[in-house]
Length: 457
Ligand code: GLU
Image (cartoon, rainbow, N blue to C red):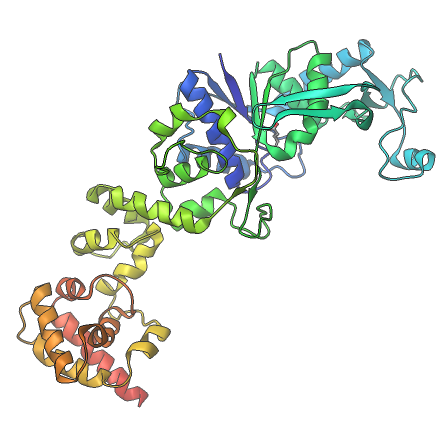
């Protein structure tokens, strides 16, 4: 049975790169009827916080990696397994694969003359009975890592120092704890970020020294921004939660994340999880860095929004509507808005004019629209609004006529009316907006804009 794991450290917001690794693992578990083990690597007590763990679990559930699924196992907490980590260190010591060492960093530096020099093996044969525990690495040969994404990667053993696996107080280091947990949890495939490739020869040595066949390795490519820099939480928007809050749909996010390093193998990139999941193969993952293109993600999201049944779209907009906004009025324009949004949070600015006493005036829109014959257009349209039929066609013809009287095409004549009605130069189609707002309120808005214009002059 394929047993994969996702092993985040709960030290910050849940990173989109983590989400991508989780999804790759999830696809493998689901397509094979295997297991996806969630292991929270919470051994760094100084940096861990319980809310980050909760954030990870809820973000995973959001992208469909759901604790209720039969393919899901855990969460396990690494801190609960310290006994096993200590036992493994003891076994390696007993087998002569590890030794105690009491050298400080300064000792090593004094002997080797450099800070960058690896450990010089000073304590290897000293037979100490306490201290930090170092793994005895082979002096010669190479450690060959077979990586499903990267191919065969060779690491010369003479470049691998005798690395520390447990501190002087017996507490395990990441390199050991991570392996022991993978062994105990019978992990068959380790699919994780490229940054861990450099740990892999050490970890493979540990697996072998513990007498267990190493797992299949697959290191998935780093994710970079438009400057080809690795995505960083200080510089880039990396938290999955911030995309959720902005109104990205989980389906679109999942689709987009899966394409960071992998392709559907077809012209079609927009594909639901049910179709991507069985197609996914580690062998098809591209080792070169993957560009996180927010523009493309927005376009994906817009497509997913447009594909929603109207009722679902309306329901998904709920978090961005104020409680006192009339839902019937909203339902009338929802379909118009659905075709225009890239992210759900944009719904607010598209429809708020319907519910507020006064539209929120966007100053740049105002300055752009309210010039030249704006006052005449508004005055002319205000007069027509008294009698015009309140359907989009009639509302449009009326404005065309007013425009023509001032030598303006509809496009130009629309601008001041649109800003008077909605406060902005872009938004829902104007005549449908006026219809939804109603005769009285539309007329009031035009009067208010005229007064504002006069005040400005
Ligand atoms: N806790 C490690 C991390 O978050 C996991 C490494 C691994 O997947 O082996 O980077």
